[in-house]
Length: 634
Picture 1 (cartoon, rainbow, N blue to C red):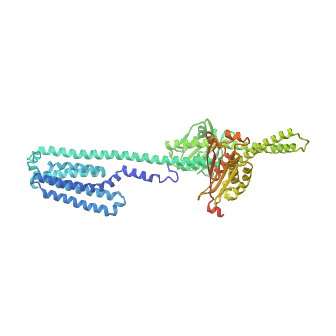
Picture 2 (cartoon, rainbow, N blue to C red):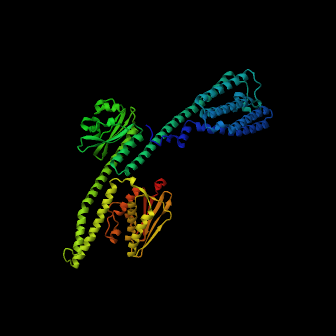
Picture 3 (cartoon, rainbow, N blue to C red):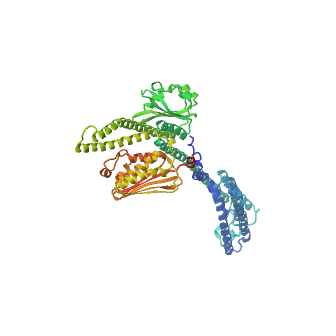
């Protein structure tokens, strides 16, 4: 499946590239070719030291030829070192120059080693064992074929060396084997059968080493490929989950059902990398499915309208709770309009029920123009997306119903409330006849209760209007200083009457805020009003409005009021909630003030944090978005 947009290069990230290089032994080759150059200095030094010790033990030891071999090793190693340091080809990290470099080193080392073997006893030389290391190196760093070719060359060179020595074509054997200092290397003439047996063991050792090395390398390479495949799958899964998280977050912020479903269909097609997606919801009759949202489907395909569940076996099965995955669209009895599906270019599809618990809301489908496009992982992922979409749709439907009810109820209550409130005032002022002091007191209490009720009705109307679908196009650059000046005048008077000190700190050169004048006034008023109301006489309320960063303006209200119990802080933004100590101090209150504040901030793209301690006070900090320069100029 295609990865979501923005994640196509996920498999090219450094971690993935490192795994890719390691599993094909490329990184090992790149690192080891220079390591061989470095270790060769040590080997040459050790060889020179060993030659000197052997010469001291036996003066007839061939000092000059063996030292010349060591000098040859130092010479070609110097050339290799300079090539490595100065050649540009090794900076490109292209693999071919490194392979050539490794071949050159192994070949030169084997030539040098066989010269040393000849001067120290031919096939009887203990140095013959060192050819095994070169076979292992070739098996690890180079291809299996290269390893076996080097093995064949080693076997052939050893055979030629013994044949030449056997027929006395070469000079007399090395003096090392004729010295009394090394009796266990006595090079007496052995029968041909013994030599063949020794040579057979040598050949077996060489070939077994080559086989074991290449087999282990092949096994590790296969495991590396499997690791690479798993890593790629994890990358794709991570990309899908990240895209799903972003999608669910956007759906959670949607206030309109159509917007939410459009996000779901567009997101499903994008994440799964397929042709299109659709959501069909049950109509009021419960017998038909109506296309509620589509992505990537033509108008002609949608022109048939609602799908009759009874006449569509595939949709009937889905609504009964089964998922349907069709790898190839060739079974007409599955579909009500099979010809339309083929014309649309749909080759395979997966459909799942949109269900919340046991209630089916509709059908969610994704379509591909490739046959057998969906594997088990895709179906599991789509099932998760479908469940989350169903929950979001059900939740938003409930919220819309709740908001509709609140708005209707508040609207219906507003007219009779106004009439009753006006009549109470008429009665209390004696326009309908004399009123005793006791009656006036009772009527005054009724008026206060009605005022509280009126505030609740107004808050419900505001909340309902805002939740019915806020329009962000209404956000404009607003002068926060001007709004705060009007609010400051109102609340300084209220604080003075209560004998609470009110301090307002407004920063210079305050940038314009991306908001709405009414919303900003409501935000400022709600928070400052809370602080003034819940701060006792002699306390202090401090209001700060100043730039915080090029993108944010800080609005902070702190007080020395009653504070909020820690257990109540998580519930402050829940509808109608009021802390117990707040109800004890002030009976009036709707429990919607902070809810409105939070929704205003969510709408304009701001944030809110709250710190409080009982008996010490509360600090509320809001970060408001700064209007972009282009918007401010407009």
